Length: 458
Image (cartoon, rainbow, N blue to C red; front, side):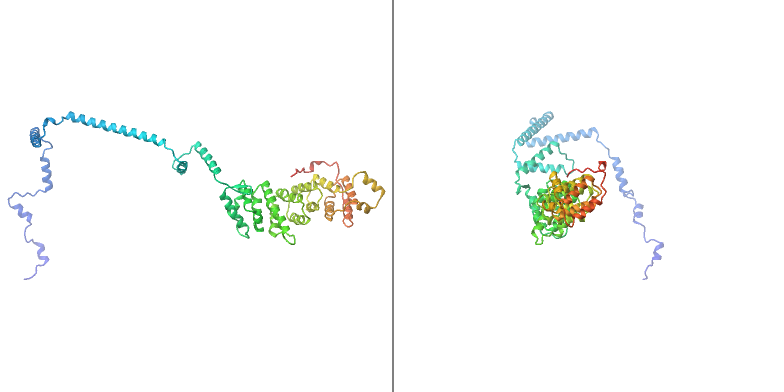
């Protein structure tokens, strides 16, 4: 038997579909869909019951309820009516309100009880610090002015209660002293590199002198002295820089010369002196004048004066310093500084020039005694022997003044200076001073003083 191909079966069907066969036979089966049938049923059902059927349902329910009550032995008269049940509900609500009021009263009593509790001071401080930090977090908190004042008072009381450490008259918190003692140990072995940040902050502190004393500047290395001088002189005002130069730099300068065998100064200390001239007024008041007033040796004066020769100084500062030095008592160290400042060849005001003229005139014999002696004896050597000799430094300073300012003195001043040369004659320097004074053209004595610069004393 051969196989049926697809082409043969395509054209004709083997049998009728089942739906057609069922519909051709008479029966109860309908061809409508279930959804349509359900819709029709829903439409046929009424939305509500009529009064008759509802009365029957209620009657049946009542009879069933009565039978149940008879079985359980419940008397119908003992059951509360609807009004009574409503009243009971209201009474229950009133009881609940009374309970709420009692609970609220209990809360109030509890709050009063909490207010009367004594809180520990430490716990209260912790509580206040916590809420103060939470207010400052930026979440809408605000601080009252009274709270700030009370907080400041509490901080002061706490600082008073904390034990402060005292180091030879310096009263600072113990943490500050411990930190800067370590800084002092670092500076005691410092050679190169950056300074500690805690040390760089010192010029900005109000009590920087007390904190600086803790670091023990006497044990600093010369390298640290140089770096500290740069830091303090550049960042402090002139008055504060003067105190640093006098208390630190001057002491280290003198100690360095005394401790060395050849009485020389360390290279870094010498560089620190140069840096201190960044503020000339602080240098003169904090280093030069205290050095001169404290029995300065010629060696110290020579080393310090060499710094002045290598650094440029404003003319007004140098003229004021000359005027101050000329008013001091005679000292070879003072004369060294006068000579160095004169040799800088600044245009000095007449006020300073007059002070220098009176300084050199101070060393001659004044009055009639000198005139009588001049009439009796004409030998300058005998006059010179009657007066105590002066060091060569003084004669060199006199010569430098005559060479530079011979045209800025009056005729009277030149005559007095020539007389001083005659009395304080030096065999090699005296003739040069006399020649310079005679070669000059003196200024007119009646010249207006308005060109002179009035210098205030330091």
